Amino acid sequence: MREISDFFVPWLKGQKMYVSSHIDLAWQHPELHRLMSNENPNPPSDKVIEAILKYGKMANRYADQGFAVRGKLAEMNGLPGIENVMLGTGSSEIYDMILRSFLQPGDEVIQHTPCFGIYKLRTAVAGGKIVSVPMTYKWGDDHFRFEPEAILKAITPKTKVIIVANPNNPTGNFMDPAAFVKIAETGIPFIVDEAYIEFAGVKEKSQVGLVKKYKNVIVTRTLSKAYGLAGLRFGYALGDKDVIMQIAATLIPWNQSTIAMWAGLAALEDVAGLKTRVDFNNAELDRIKKEVSKIPGIKPFDSRGNYMLFDSKVPGKTGAGMIELAQSKGMILRGQPPMYGSDGWFRLTIGTKDENDMFIAAVKGYFTK
Image 1 (cartoon, helix red, strand yellow):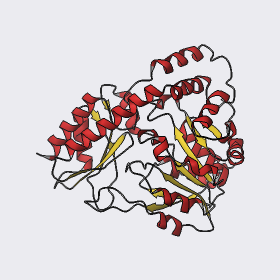
Image 2: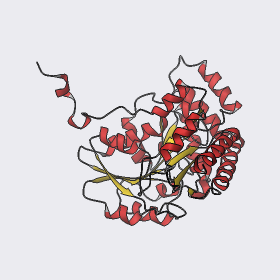
Image 3: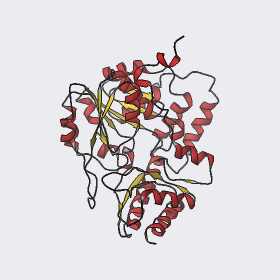
Image 4: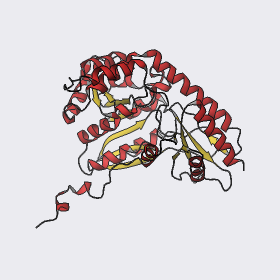
């Protein structure tokens, strides 16, 4: 009798389920402050709550294709109609659908690192190979530097997808708009991850205009961050209708719940609610950077996400040590593996004002003693 393991596709063997241990820790210990997962500290607005309650009472009914919310997203982004929009349970599912649509075993996906780990994980599940092109950084630089020419040089006949996050997570900065055009002109499927774009302004920073000119460009977004709906799992992709509708063939029927679709529409229509969240986030980013910059040997990076990356050159003080100290004081921070010759990296998700004050005090206490 054959072993069941013989029946798994070869590229899946050895792959592990994605686990967010820091999120599990937060749910197991609700007394700890969640400053680690790029969640929004503000609860959903009253308008969103009303939609959740209204459509929660209709949970016995299947959802439609999301005509209303897809139409709203098309309108907001200057696209012709709902066929330019695909919904997913968070942008993570969007990436799964995109990568399964383009990859065969052995095909390559180029990512610009450091970046969101889901690209690598979903590439592996599809049997693809990830090719990481590092951003450049040396101590004292104001920000990490995108390397679009290095991305272009990494292209091979096996390259089937290129992914760039804008702004990048965890570095918080943007790539030059001209670089997006250069990559788009290769004709290779080019995914622009705009999960945090609302914090900087969609009109000011989004590359969604490229989808009207280049059929190979797809923009992905989520309502988990600026809109504060991480737990509802609402992501979407914007692109040429022929491309989006072909990828949509991978979509699991009713993948987006009735509740999530109508709550998402309520959030999109609540312009004032979004502005309140964005203004709070950006003011706190500026305040935290100003305070932490006073500590010798600590480098906070500019960000227009809801997170901030830090590097330390303080002798004997590491990022791991800061995370351990923070947890002893009731806060969960996010780790960042050693890179660029430094073990001083750690990450913060913007919390409430009181939580951010706790963080500032902890950083000052750890790095000045």
